[in-house]
Length: 379
Picture 1 (cartoon, rainbow, N blue to C red):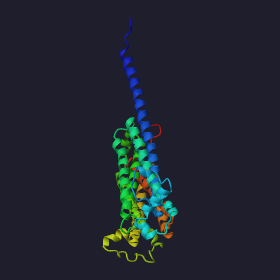
Picture 2 (spheres, rainbow, N blue to C red):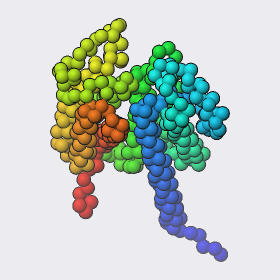
Picture 3 (cartoon, helix red, strand yellow):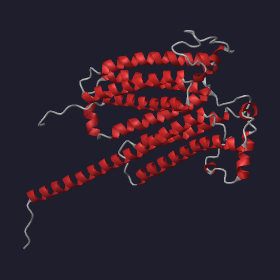
Picture 4 (tube, rainbow, N blue to C red):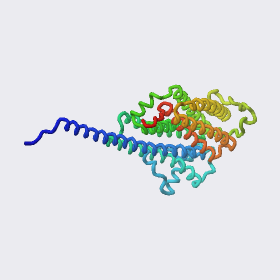
């Protein structure tokens, strides 16, 4: 006669199975979060490369070398001399060639073509990496609860960015434009930094589980978080102003500092009519606004740094210090860019440090919201 199992034995076995199942589920969630962070890190690196190549494309006046938008077929470059000549013929029809670059031969055209093609190709690679990762995690149900919409947002912004890129390029293909419209360039760069910001924030959040974030938020410093949010927005504004400077080559117009053309106020800041166009197209006024905004940002950054140094949490204090150090480096590079007439290596370094500063400010903001609390020994 078979013996019945003790009720206590059954409960104990069930509890053991439940613990094992829970451990497996937690492991899966942890593994998915880790894999998603790796995917986000790859996307982040690619977007930074995209910004770098985009900056070089602008600095070398290569952005208008491809006059058509072919998201799929444009992935292949010209394969023979006939194809190259066809691309060059299209370029010869736009104002940049007819007014500024009539001296160009086919070999000269190839040099600027490769910059723009590389920029667009990176965009395609980023879209492919996002799609493979997102739909792969989605199909295998590896996306943590509540994260599907956030990860989809990155791809949606990438699609918008592609459309804005063509909207920007199209502004330089007609009329008397020798380059793209500066405000469209600023929009294009601004979206890129927004994408970077979301990727960075999600990367930080996924580094800690939901329970830990909820507990950390209770210890968050609301006023410091508010200041960091303002710091982030101010830095974003300065990035947009820098794009306006780059869009009209205003950084090469006045190469003395702290004065401009030997004066504290730029000469003829409102010489263009109507008045509003000076804020977008007048090199003197645009560079002057960028400088003044930089001074104000430096002052506000010092205030944020001093406030952050008073945090009760070591990680938060370090995060604010690192962001402020990056700001100091960026100011020095900005002055150097002016004094050198925006030389290629100085200008692109200035842009890359802007990326570092942007992410470090977001990181400081994250730790103000979700501080890492010191553990009591033996707890």
